[in-house]
Length: 344
Ligand code: NAI
Image (cartoon, rainbow, N blue to C red; front, side, top):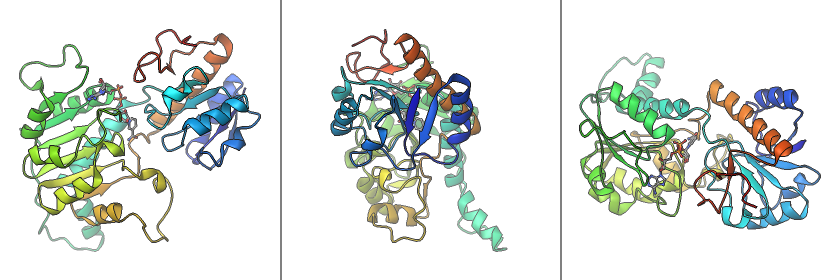
C-alpha cells in the first residue's frame, strides 16, 4: 500500500517508518501541505495521510477521486479541515480519535501554570541574573472555578488534573458524559452560568458550526473580570479580535493559546526572520499575559507513537477488510465515528 504523506515534519517520520515497515505500508513524505495546488502529488498513491492544516476541500476531494485516490487518513483527531459532506460517497476518511488525551490536557495545565505563576517571565529574568520578584505575583489554583467546555477524552483528563489542584469544575457539553456530574465539585451547567462563574475557561470541544467563536465579544461580556482563557482545541473557537479587545480592556486576565484562527498560515514553520503579517497574532504575542504555543499540545513521544500505530492500523484494516472502526462518516452525523464502516 502506497500513501502520500503531506505536511511532513522530522518528528513524524521515525514512528511512521517503524509501523509502516511492520505492516507493509510505504509512505512517501512531502513537506508541502495538501491543497488544490499540491494535490497532483498524490497521483499513483492509494491514499493520502494529512494533518490539521492540510486543506481537504471539495476541489481537493474531487481531484483525489479523479486520480483514483480513495483514502484520506487523518493523523489527528479533529477533522474540521475536511469537507465531510462532500467526501461522503466518494472517498473514505479515517482519523485517530484518541492518541493521548494526557498530552493535550497536561499541556493545557502547563500553559495555565506558566501563565498565572509568570514562569515565562521568571525564566527570562533569571537567565539575565535578574532575581527581582516585582510583577511576578500569581494566584493559587486551589479553590478556583474552572469552566470546561467539552467533556470528551481530553476535557475529562483536564478535569481530573484540575480536581488534583483542588479546583471546582463547571462543565458544558452538548452531549454530557454520564456519571461525571457529582452535584458538588463537578457540575454540568449552561454556557451562560459557566461564563458567569468561571475564573478560568478551557475549551475542549471540536470546531463545528455550534462552537465557532464560542468565545466572542458577547460571551466575554458575561465572564468574570480577569478571566483566564485556555484554548488547546481549535483556533476558530475563539474570536481572536474579541479576545485581543478583552485583553486590552483588562476583562481577560490572561490567555493561553495552543491554536489560533489563522494558524495554518504560520504554525509549524519558522518565521523568525520574517515580518509578521498577521497584526492580531503579533499583538496577542506582544502581550505579557498571553502565551502562544504553535499547536504543540499533542507533541509527546507517546502521542506520536500512538498516532503512527493507529494510522497504519486504519490503513491496513481498510485495505484488508474494507472496514475501519475509525472511519468518519457524514451519514452518521459528521461528528461521530461511522458505526458500521460501510456507509457507502
Ligand atoms: P472528544 O470527541 O473525545 O470530545 C469532544 C467533546 O466535545 C465531546 O464530549 C462532545 O460531546 C463535545 N461537543 C461536541 N459538540 C459540542 C458543542 N457544540 N458544545 C460543547 N461540547 C461539544 O475529543 P477530544 O479527543 O477530547 O478532543 C477535543 C478537541 O481537542 C478536538 O476536537 C481537537 O479540536 C482538539 N485537539 C487538539 C490537539 C492539539 O494538539 N492542540 C490535539 C488533539 C485534539
